[in-house]
Image (tube, rainbow, N blue to C red; front, side, top):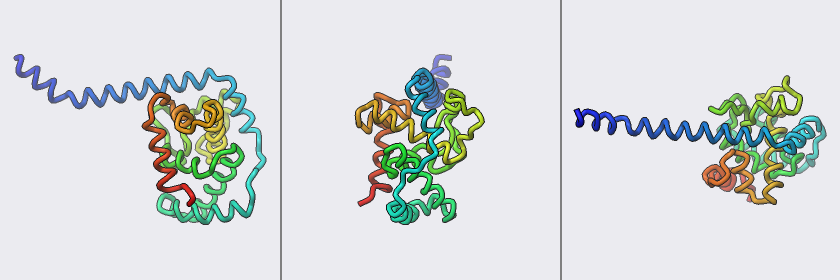
Length: 201
C-alpha cells in the first residue's frame, strides 16, 4: 500500500508542480490588478490619454520608420495594409507618450505577438494586454480594447507612467507594467526582443 501511494505521488508530482505555478501566476496577476486599480494617479493619466486625439509624429521620420519596421514585421503580419496601419498607430501613440516606438513594438511582441484579439488568463486584452477594468475606471466602458488605437493609447500611457515612477529605470518600469516587480524575467524578454528585432542601428 505504501509503495502504491509513493508511486502515485511520484507520477503526479509534475502535474502538482504545474498547478502550483499556475496558481502562483494567477495570484500574482490578481495582486497586480488590485494594485493598479487603487492608483488614482494612473487613472488620471489614462483618462487624459484617452481624451487626447492629437498626433505628435513627424511625417518624414514616420515615413522612414514605417518602411524599416514594415520589413521586420512582415513575417508576423503578412498583409501589407494591415501592417502599415498598425505601425502608423504604434508610431503615433508611442511618440505621443514619449516612448521609443521600437520599445512599444518589443512590448507588443512579448505581450501578444501582435495578435489584437489576444486575451490573457488574467483577462488582459489586445496588443499591449491592458486590463479591461481601466475602461470603467476612466468612464469609457463602451470602448474596445481589441481596437488597436484604444489599446495602444492606454498601454503606452501605462508604460510611460511606470517609467516616470521608476525615474527612467526601464527594467523596473517593464516589471511594473507586467505586474512582476521583483523579477527580471519579463523585463529581460522585452529587452531581448528590443535588441534582437526592433532596435534601429
